[in-house]
Image 1 (cartoon, rainbow, N blue to C red):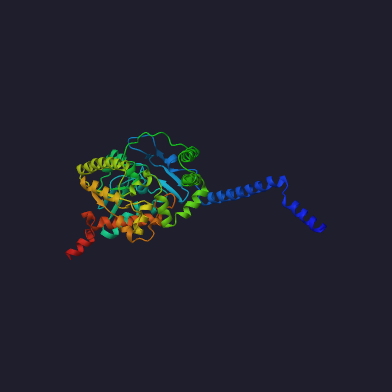
Image 2 (cartoon, rainbow, N blue to C red; image 1 turned 30 degrees about the vertical axis):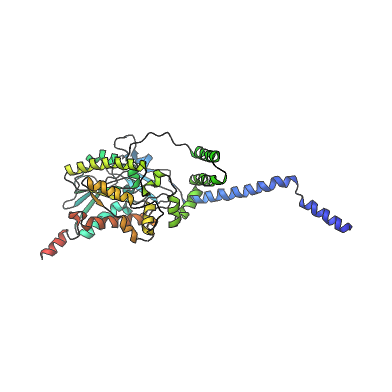
Length: 406
């Protein structure tokens, strides 16, 4: 009896934690979690390091609303984005990342002057790896004639900026104008609506959760809370690490991308929203003006739409959720370009035969990497030499013409 009583008393005493332990144990847990988070963040920053210098703050002038961003002539900058390599941005005396000095084209060369925004500019890629550098090589190999591509593309160059700077394009004496557009270009074709400044992360999160809890049950606000957590991760290197590897899964990436708002992913809807219809209307106006200037200068205009990462993945997969169509924007652009007298080079169907084309883009950043640029160069060359441009049709080069006469 006595031994049993003592054992039970001792067990009860051992089971009751001192007040100090109730403080120390949670503190140790929080400290452990903090150390794990700090270590992960530190590792992530090493893996996805960024440079202190950027092309925007070192080589660009951003004070001309009419023409948009412009590079300072004869400048050189280096920039490393989180997922990309350290890239050099070297601009000639005309402020172009063209790889050659501006001036008369080489004798006998067929000159293409290319315009566009960040994809065509080659953001986060060395110039030698961009499709601006690879495309003329592909075309020369296919046609047997010397092809020069002079790149006048610039960051944040929307369709209105291309229109306003078209005089510079014509001044380069092109034999062909190649205008590369993306969903971003079309989304930014409409004038700035002058919306108020977007709140910071904390403001967005507080507002989102507060509104959700005020109007719905706690269980139904879980998606909003998860989105808030996503926003938190989005501003950390740890979040970039997680998203970078998560987005390497084709299906997971597409699902995640389609959750974005209309401004980001609405172009993939089979029925465009009022906002995208408005953007297409403004894009139509810019295309009409550019095509008119091109015709007046006697220079053919070719427009090509490059898919973004999610769009390329959906086309390759060959299936997508109801209510979406990765070809819809391409159909709209084709109609606008052809109606206004330009030529549309459609490369989107070619992505059907490419397994996992999204691997040709940086997973989180979304810009093409070296592999993606090589794919784009090959597909554009295929379209330009397939008959869309008579002067570049395979068999139109001097060597082939000589063979036919023998």
